[in-house]
Length: 395
Image 1 (cartoon, one colour):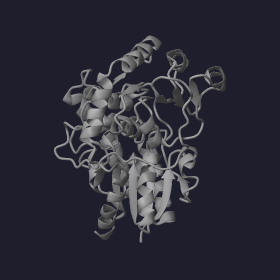
Image 2 (cartoon, one colour; image 1 turned 135 degrees about the vertical axis):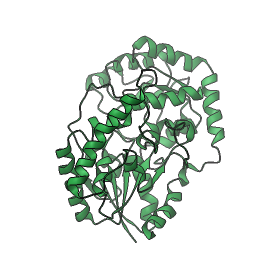
Image 3 (tube, helix red, strand yellow; image 1 turned 90 degrees about the vertical axis):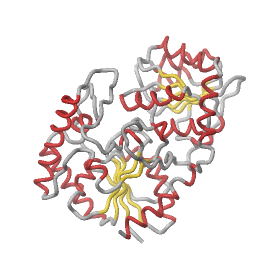
Image 4 (cartoon, one colour; image 1 turned 180 degrees about the vertical axis):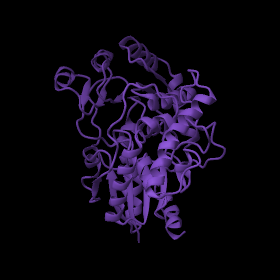
């Protein structure tokens, strides 16, 4: 059997480590040895602590430019993972040292452009896995992610040329083959697209794609306990944001029994709002059970939990905190299965929550989506990937 290194380098929350854990379970059952290299060991530990899988710190770039209006995936890479050629080379060497320590037979990379770059030219087998946003389509230049703003082909090409120059300069120092275009980094070793077509922000741009279904971690977590009361069960998974107190006040005034998982919530807010129809859970929850039992979910728009709720036929209120979440929310809006409040204004959140509670059309659309994928065995998506891994290892 093989040694497999699972990598997570960019992004936050459970949305990257949970899918990798979903893959790791059946691979371990198949006899493979699994090690994780992660951006945030503390977050990873909350899900991996009882698994026995080793956790290593990934050589992630923490010097990220904030406050930029990013218009393409190339520009995202330019301002996150590949913003300085010398630093890219140093980090790639750190990745290669980690490879030499673990001696993997295969890399499985979730949002890990630095690991993919470091592996290039080494002969190490690797595959990029994930959902639409983190697996760009095989095209040049990569498309405008803000279609409501003007960005002509020349601007997109210029963005891509800048990051491509940095990538190829680093590859040259490392003695690895250069790239012809940015998306080649993700496709040259194969990729696995774990989503549904309706939830892929690049669905229109992909010439051909095999959608394997959302990769969801279905085990672990605390069983949900709902506060007493009559009404619609609301589940909220929220991070700190400026108008979070107004959201909590709206939820309290709604009177609906509401279960909230709010990592890093301010103690003063917890003291003020806990009780009555609001129940807070500090621990990660059995999210599959939550999806079955709730009537409506309030999310920021991370792909995994959004997909799980839709596959359970539950309407959504999306409160996006950044561009990726906004684009995921646009997929929900196209389905008619929810609403978004991208400005995070209290009055907008209150109004849209009221619509979702009063209008049955959103729930109807969510249930139609769930019915469309009724034949998808969500719990078997990860297991079905095991034969693909065997083929990659044998190639």
